[in-house]
Amino acid sequence: MYRQYIVKASSGLTTYAPRRAFATSLRVMGEGDTGAPRLGGSNDPFVKREKANEDFSIKRREKEKLLELKKKLAQQQEHLKQLSDHIDDLTREQGGEHN
Picture 1 (spheres, rainbow, N blue to C red):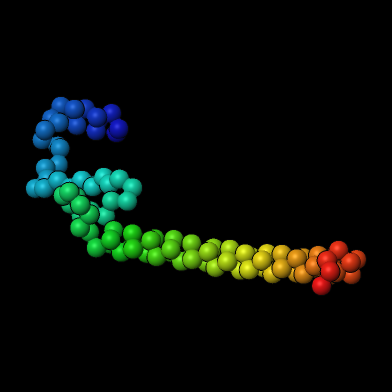
Picture 2 (picture 1 turned 180 degrees about the horizontal axis):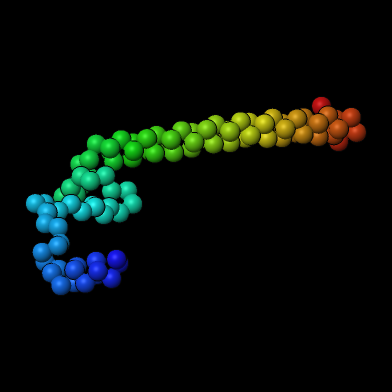
């Protein structure tokens, strides 16, 4: 049966081939493509929104890091002040300075 199908299909290949009124094909897109035409700049609102969200989250993380660094700096300055006061107390007790 399979042999008969092959013989029939190969003898009149054009007559058995299905004819289509239209052809469809898959659109091949690269990573990050949204289907909008790229003419010079990115006019796609989705791309603009994603970029804005990324920029916002990066700025927020940087701001959090800055606040954390400021907090650590204040702690270090407080610690240095305590050490300086302690050194001053020790020198006064030992009579190093005449006040």
